[in-house]
Length: 159
Length: 159
DNA sequence: ACAGGGATGTTATAACATATCAATCCCGAA
DNA sequence: TTCGGGATTGATATGTTATAACATCCCTGT
Image (cartoon, rainbow over all chains, first blue to last red; front, side, top):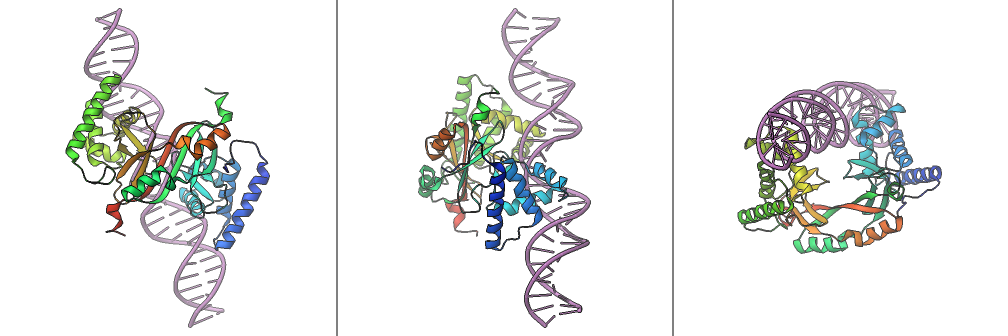
């Protein structure tokens, strides 16, 4: 299941590929992929972990791309709406999407040690919760599925 | 006010029963179920929906049980640790548990109209996400499963 | 009496997020 | 060309959620 998990990979290439995907996606959708938004996504991709809005803002500020909170929140809002990033509700933090803009219902494995995030997929609405919702007449619009714990790298060393 | 699973019920009896369960649970576990904590749980039970910490604080303050944020957060922390309440991460809000302190991995249906919350159960860790976690060597400690949408009562009237 | 732990009171501040309005840029219509 | 509108960005202020830090009180075992 598609998680780019907690494993090593060619990160430079990974970032470049995802940026290219994002650019293509925005072009196709008629979305305005401005410098601030590009840089925001690039920062999230490079980190490959959950980043707070103010962490992102600090890095944007280093590049002279804005220093006030709305700058970061606007960029994040754009990325989330475009499907290029996700909010991790349990951390009030944000992470780049690894599925390049396709429609999906993400599920996350979140390491509390290093805040690394692996993205998987769920069919939650067709499972037990979906049944419960249907039985209650509840109309599901959005799902949040987040599992917190320790990634392999953080299990050994620190207790 | 609405819902245990979004349906009508004898709420006074419901609250009383849950409070009795909570008291018994705390006694059994040697937990100190103080007046502030009792009142906090009672408020959550009466509302039967997600309540912000500051909403709770306001109601506690009306009873002269404290007026500063830590009062509310300490009470909520106690209730959550004791399994008597849950945090709804997607709303940064809190809700009384309807399963009286038993160990469980809760899943929620959250109405964005009235903030009513229905609590179900998941076997998430044994499902697809569990498999993904196992494959990645990820150790799950806690899960957050929250479905947002509209409850039956909020689907018809307001758009 | 007194030490220690748990609960609470109090002050202050950290961390996360948005409202509002002004300035700018780009593009298409008149 | 000029105008106007929409989208984006800049800037200020503020709202909302959460915790740190330290003082006090009260109960309990010695």
